[in-house]
Image (cartoon, rainbow, N blue to C red; front, side, top):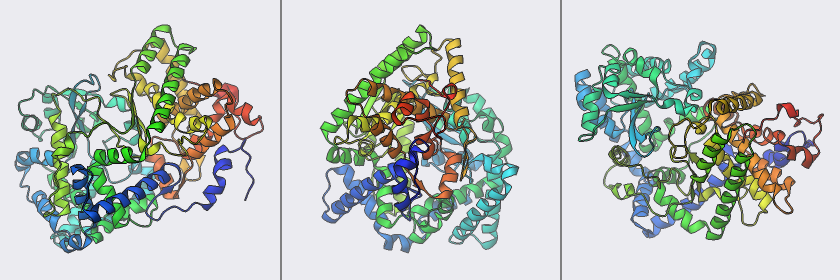
Length: 633
């Protein structure tokens, strides 16, 4: 084994032995860190689900419905016998849309069902006033991973990916009742329509600046932009009895050019594109042959060799529709109150440390500091799992006499109806955005709160048996990371209530932007074996990592017997990940987080504690000149 010095490469020094031995599961693109914890939760809950199914004994009605859906996925004999038949009714509805007038007549039902349209209409918190809900309008998805793949310089990659996708779709279309000539035409038209969309929708980099999604327009204005779509009539039908003046347009460029995409001349292209997309989305709940075939493009993109086996897939699908009840069950059974109290104490300590750091900040004026501290005082904490299940889950039903496909369509329709019903009602700030069994954490800018599901509160991130220094390098830094999102390049534009509002002085925001640009420069253009890093795309997560380390290192400085070596070692351990080359390449285009090796190795070099702990010198690879070190929070 090659000897690695910690001063040259913290990530590989800590993780080398594991990286050389670790084996990525055949149905996964990665292993390590988050992925290993997620696999542990999956294995535990699959056993739980199978036991409930075998014994026909359920903790509550929510889990009963979950297991009914779980068993429907596992009933491969029934699904294989049905084949594509359950989806043909919807596919033929698309095929039989007569013209634009007929389309507009059927449009409200299509929206309610979550049907494939040349636009997406949802209801969510209003970014300017987070006490209320608004309608959000955005464009559709594209075939390739990102709009950059459609650029002329990406022609070879584009051709290869679209070739693989087309091969998959050709085979899928052969299962339908379309003639061979129709199948070829549907495929060609789908590719043509996708090309039109891709020229106008946002790239992942553009989406990463989410505050730019707030572009309110009157219903009349949107109706004018989207003709021949009857937007006014659609909104009146969907939200009958509710006064709707504005729609928030997330992608102005797309909708200002909408008529070039969707019109009488492109209508047949659209129908064929919608047909193909609906067929593709249905494959996962039809036969096993179709599930495997419909996954081939995704497998190629990620480098994965096989789809999840049936029991795992059944768990993943059923728990996705009943995620809150499943998360509550997992949290209550597998997460201890002692650990919960310990982590909450850590959060409070980090928030207080953050306040102290803001108050001593050397580039903010007192007026801006006061607003920042007010935001910290109001930050909400959602730890482990919610106290109760959202009323939505009482509405969800499972019909065991119907097909799996029909059930999934019905569940989707109920969930969308529930979301649409929120328009005109106050935002529920107690609602969780992540279930208890999810290995993740997040900051919600609209609610100014952080969520830490029970599943992430495990070693190496956290353990009651680990030292405080280790836990600070793990979950502590993640907690401080999420708090830092309140002050990243997006979160900084929202106030203490989550409203999109400028609470900075002009001079302070200018200084903050200068530091943001320094963070972009620190990462931008780094060459890795699988591609080049885009510093602007990942800047919000890097600001959060930087703030997370800064805050937890200050907590460490106040501790007796603080073990900085243990802190940095666990920091590197939590980001440890072994991934397939194709997947690593894909992440550079679609993931706002930096590559794992950079998350582990880049931030420590910004802090004095790194240099003193390991006696890092100018000649070491993880040395960064003081003038280039970035400090924001």
